[in-house]
Length: 103
Length: 236
Image (tube, rainbow over all chains, first blue to last red):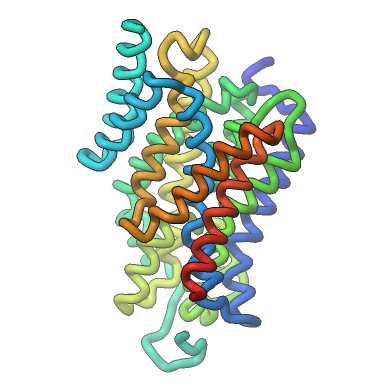
């Protein structure tokens, strides 16, 4: 696979993702001229991204074992304390490698 | 809801407004670049070429959805799962777009709908802040978006080029990068105790579904279950 490789199927999926994403972005602006979202819809949509992220990480963490649990805790802690993605990544991966080396 | 036709200060669409948005967003954009680097590395590890990863960043322009897509990526590509998850993760943009209507309804159609491409969490937050203060800068989000877009696409190119040079990712703990990124995103999305119930439900449903169903459907199952719990909770 070369650097400049553009597979037609991959490009097709990317274009479909782009169209879908734009529709969600522009959809709200368009839709509100026609209907008003209820408080419940509003609440459901607001928690959706967080819930999806938790659903991605949950099974991975459970399967990851103690090294992933410890590293995960470090990532959460560092994100809260420093607000820096880099610090959280470096700290988390450092702990992960250290624990893996010991176990 | 604010009426579209109330007579507050006019909303304009000017180069000065776009410039203000661009400059005010630069520090944020640099931060987003960090995620772009990671996206590039992971995309390359998932089998996308540098050109494909860059194309995705340039045209999709939605961080969480892109990271989840490359997490799901496999050969053959699970097209339905990738697209469904993209739509679900981006569903929040519908709300954000709707909240911009009081101002954007007063712009030209091309200005308003062109700007919407640049709607992401960060630019929306900045633009809402600016517009609610009564600046009337309709081009603020466009300017902010261009700043983030430049960093996001540039960082993707760099990340993907670096990613190509890395051999076995687990040797450097890089298999943990995506979980770590998602944990960092979750930490930032945490809104206190009210988040606990929907997230606990999302977690449990995802873990159980991952055991029972093949593929990556547990992501949607968990996410939608968590969201439904919130809908029920608010409705009572």
